[in-house]
Image (cartoon, rainbow, N blue to C red; front, side):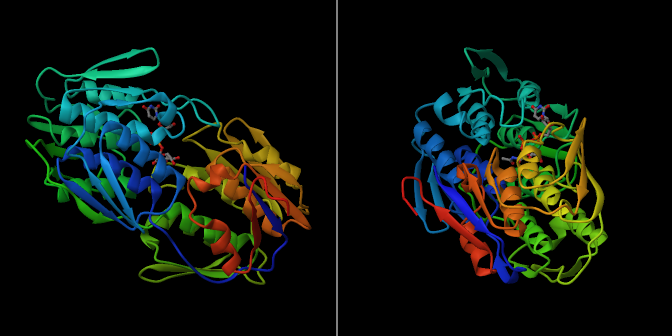
Length: 423
Ligand code: UD1
């Protein structure tokens, strides 16, 4: 297993380009199965999760071609309506195939994804939403089996809580249902809006895109889609956090500043300088004494749960008491114990971490437990005295394209140690 060896680094300086968002590509790859043609997706990041999704689609019968950051998905040969446990267990987003396969082929079998590193992550809303469109769902032997009599029927569904994945699955299914579906309290994360726009390009009739009420008038068939992936707001946020933690000055480019309102407010409350352009944000923390802040994660446009670990690392370097409350995943705090190994002082009370910041961080061997926790450990390693080794970075490779290379260009001392190679 590869690891990162990180040495204490100077304040990061320079500019870094952001890749396409994995969380936007994954549902779009599944959506491609709704047509019989060859769909094109541009600005696709080179990440492990993309390869896993491609493997899932290949098992189902799609033909996939990769050409740099362009992906083409030919779904004309779908012949196996099953997503197996071996693949779905490695990436929860594989569950996105459920809605499209049910809507297009009238039946499918998809493994339950199971929990994740920080606890259970149910899929009940995906299933209830599909049932509201007439799907008959049974869960047996660890698999979800969906069946419909004829076609899905338009229905009304109110998501009891905001769920990105359930919104995506039910929205994709509704595009081919007979009649009109009204999906209320839908998620409005940018990745959902991007999916809806891609579906609209395929010929889906969706109104209310970008709002919590999506109205979908089902159509008989969809064309192949074409579109470029939006910039990854979590990758962008992680580089802004890297600038803040090292008290550097970094311009993060090819990003979408309006997707970052809550995060940028947090950085400004800390006392960082934030300059926004049309497609960049420059964060300046050089020679600044930053202030503690209190953060609560919420569905978009609130502060993203996918940024709380990285922010916690930054807050560990700021003198005073900060807090991070996660209302989306109450127990997403595996990174605390590892940050403590580096010298951070953090206590946990229910869904809230209290950070007594400003203690000296010192390098140590630490272990990545999930994707964003890994990024938090790398950020902390940049400022910890001496050397930090972050093991199990296969988690990080799921969601950050060439993370070490991008950090190195900003002056970060991060080296990948390839498993099996003696340094
Ligand atoms: C997506 C993101 C993930 C992010 C999360 C929240 C992808 C591939 N992943 O995950 O990075 O952390 O949004 O922004 O885009 N829930 C239920 N029942 C369900 C579904 C969800 O109770 O059927 C709960 C979850 O446990 C959680 C909340 O709803 O508490 C939000 O989860 P959801 O938005 O569905 O997350 P994902 O789509 O899995």
